[in-house]
Image (tube, helix red, strand yellow):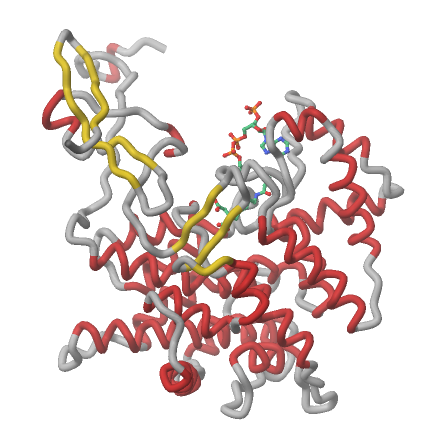
Length: 430
Ligand code: SDX
């Protein structure tokens, strides 16, 4: 007999099925609640609501566990590459050597961007935020790469995946070069995905960029750590927009827009701005801890806390180690890393943070790595978006293939005026 939950309402008893995941998570299936009882549920922010059944990423927020297709994030960070991890997320298993080689070649084939797209960049107002530019350019890709009716749906989807994975990276580097008035550097078939990005960002005719294998590895790890995170805000945006059966470029553009927010992906930029403010004010962290605890102060400790992790974000642990490695390799020191470590140490001794389970999340140390590599601050969230793209793609694909998939249309409880009549403007008083 399948386990059920019993709901008693208006004197009637309803048996609701319980769904159990492969890692023991359990949910009460309310798919037929409204049809059977006339009731809906209410859950602002959806913190208690599962939007789907997924086989892509597993998170255990209590124990700080993260796995892509069952493989622990720690093992992928140590042994995999970003492109191999992207293949794993999208296709469900690690690729053979031949599959990986074919996948990489396909990404190389689609790494250029239509020359006419460059005029788009040149007409954005100076100082436009790169995330706004990126969201616009990704939406514009559909216009430059329209669907070809003769292609099968599967072929069209595979090409669109390759275009997005490869062109998003190229668009990001182009956006940076054009914004600084520098010559655009094209992708090279001789370079790997991550090395290509660094070269497109930092190579110059008068100062060739030296590609350091350790920095390329650091970028691979950075993007592996960001590649997916189950039903976070931006992924839910991609699934919701995708449920209307719009083209994938538009759904990904919606994900980029959601990620831009400072409570979500925009936090990596906000963390560095916060650390810089602490450093510039003398380096004392206590005043900022005090402000974060003050309910009358909207200030939050950026990079701390998480909707799911009530423990140390496993990605933050790896990112913190990466900071030390990259700075050591580049023979750099960053005063903001010292501020970050002091802030973490102080917060983790404070009952407000411990009682509320506010630990460092992926964004707390990631900006230090990006600063060391030379990524400009206003591109930090763009870096998050490039990393999250394989996750958005895999989640979109899973929702498209879901036999129970339907247009996402949440309900509400109405608390407005009861029925009232229209009053002509002449009778409305002053
Ligand atoms: C990402 O979902 C994902 O998986 C996201 C992500 C991914 O990979 O996709 O992991 C990436 O977005 C990481 C989070 C990055 N954002 C930040 O670092 C911003 C700072 N963190 C907070 O804004 C907050 O912790 C959230 C938004 C991340 C999570 O908050 P919750 O758990 O959804 O709950 P909430 O925002 O309603 O906060 C509950 C209370 C509030 O106090 P009250 O209004 O109830 O009095 O906790 C307080 C908050 O003020 N609080 C904090 C805090 N985080 C929450 N107070 C001070 N500092 C903080 N960091």
